[in-house]
Length: 157
Image 1 (cartoon, one colour):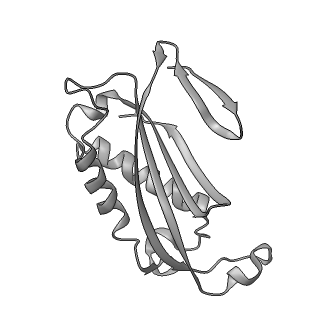
Image 2 (image 1 turned 90 degrees about the horizontal axis):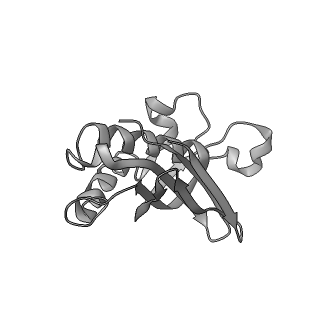
């Protein structure tokens, strides 16, 4: 599947289209409160222990809707996202083995949540049919209204 991207007004993914036509998107939001330290002089005062609250946005893209006219069950998808975030919420990320030796930047955290969500899709946590229809997953973590990072990639079942 070849993707074509068009950017307008600073939005990276204003238009996403495949060779077969447009896609549908389902976006869910949640939040995550963490503590961590960054390593490296470039991070200045963030080298000390500090907290961050992220607004989390996840978008699932599908070329077609299911028989009920949805990308995925919104309630079920919200539950899956909450379950993915729960082990990270109110935690010092530096204490978690999966992040040992890494700076848990916003970009790194977006990629980690993306990986967990794709694993949940492959596992059938959103339903057996969804993994066959969802083509792309985007995760956006907003630190504040002026700064955020994202990770998006095609979903490979």
